[in-house]
Image 1 (cartoon, rainbow, N blue to C red):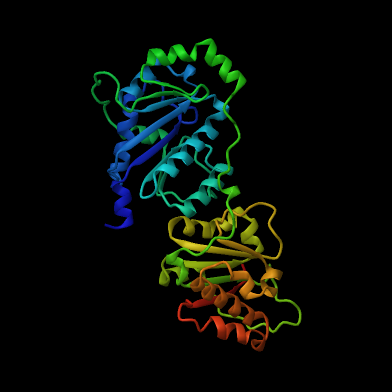
Image 2: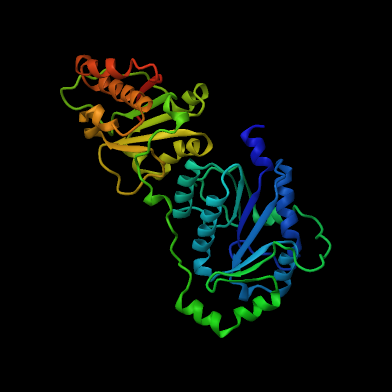
Length: 385
């Protein structure tokens, strides 16, 4: 069974912001779950669907809460300002407990910006099938790669007639209050809790954090090679405008190759090295390659002439300043990496130097590392981006 087939039968987790995507007036809340399930089944996804709805439930009518709980939709109480951060924190926690293959769905209007940036980096490490729904369409330069997206109102029409009323609540239908760490299955108890003095005091004293927790900003930038990348092919894309050849160096330019054309003949696992200031600093331009890194198991390296002010959306295994890359001793640079990976990287560096220095200056390096039986084939491309 292929990875895509595995994902289509794996669990599906849904996070839903009820303020951004509310239930229309007169709409039966019991139709929400079957609408989402039917939309997935049309695309061939048959896994078990879990749905969590976030919002200020003091503003949600009892019949809506009752309808959601009767179909197994979990309901979370948050203040409107913290819904985004609470939902993202739960999403990250779920990813840590549920490795791929699995499917994620986000029903939310505010996916772009820092939410999209951090999740795009997470997706480059662990790739889930991602789906979106919204009441207002996101910008076209969204960094996330998704398999499908729906307008919220259109998605709700998928379910047809509501299912028959169940006896009691589903075992999965829980009510949660994040501020008080409270949960129950009784709507009456949940309403009583939300109107209690204790809840009001807790929400006033310790309100949920409204700031998004950036998970990937604390990640290191130097990782040893994974087994599948250790001997895989390496493509180097070099922007000679951003990282020029120093004066006095002997430039020997390579051929021009587009990454998307290269990856057709070089499927993942493989490695890509990007030498560019623009791709390091611009979220929009970086997103072109970021799309492929979210879809496939490519390993990414980055070099730039000046360290970017903001962390790139590209998730890298290592980063270098261009000047230090040209002057570094290969042995010192790679002494902490596995031997087979040293051969691969040394081949890249040696050949990159061959473009910027005379061949005689790198002959010894190239002979030592590029002739290694574990060294992968390397393609060097000089691009004006």
